[in-house]
Amino acid sequence: VGGIGFELTIPLSTFHSLGGPGEETKIFTHFVVREDAHQLCGFATEEERSLFRLLISVSGIGPKMGLAILSGIGLAEFRKAVAQGAVEVLVGISGIGRKTAERLIVELREKIVLLESRNEEAVASRLPADRPLVEDSLQALVSLGYKRADARRAVQKVLALKNSGSYSVEELIRASLKYI
Image (cartoon, rainbow, N blue to C red; front, side, top):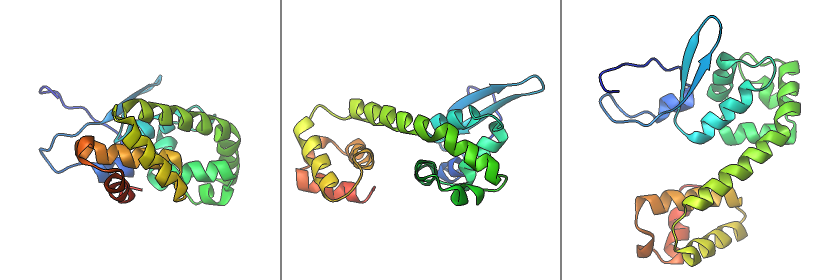
């Protein structure tokens, strides 16, 4: 950046979303300051960074383990495992034992619900002013059995790719289904 190189430690999920050499990439960072080291961690999405921050708030989970967790399991799968108390799923991540998995579930269950509601509010605030189109599309996707948060993300992706005025409700729903 501006002639300065930064070393970032990133999870595999971020690595897979990076472009090729020379392509511009946006990375969300978290700076970890410890007595013995300063470390810059990078994430492809704000959601990943938020979950990382939650992970390192758990006693016994440091930046290295937080990145390992994000590398070993997807965001949605992790949230689901914590919400359902699925210790077996978390134990399947390299470096996570039974006690650590149980601690993650106990300490993060309520925090993850709160984080999801904040993310949903943030997504809603970024949706375009064409509310009837968006709301009708969201309602239809929810009635098809999709979670409202997933539907919002999909609609937002579609609208980010193309101007919302050029879609009918049916077209927006059809295009959004590709991103759910």
